[in-house]
Amino acid sequence: MKDKIKKSLVSIGGKNIKVEESKKSKQNKHKKFFIKTLNTLVSLQERSENLFLEYGINTLMYEDLYFQIIEDLIYEHFGSAVAEVMFWWVTNLNEMKKEDFFIEDEKTGKKYKVKTPTQIYNVMKKLKIFKNI
Image (cartoon, rainbow, N blue to C red):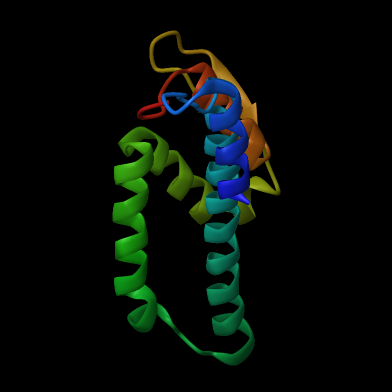
């Protein structure tokens, strides 16, 4: 498929044609990746908790090194401020279902109510705390 597209573009624009992904497309991919990653972390946390509560199986010793790798990659990819919010969300999700939670802008003190990963993403983007976006 890529070869077909490449041949078509070369025939239209010549061999020196350069195609770049739009900024909007990159931002959409970034948003989808963030939301998918955060939802996956939540699922992993819930699965671990359910194994312990239902069967008494504590998987912490087994999962610990895997989570350390995942955590390091998240810090590297998104930056420390975003990573902290992500891990805060994952570890406090059960409490968040009972009460409201907010992300506070440290510069202005304004609080933004968040209930979903999409809202978290939008607030952090608005506050410009993402690394390399």
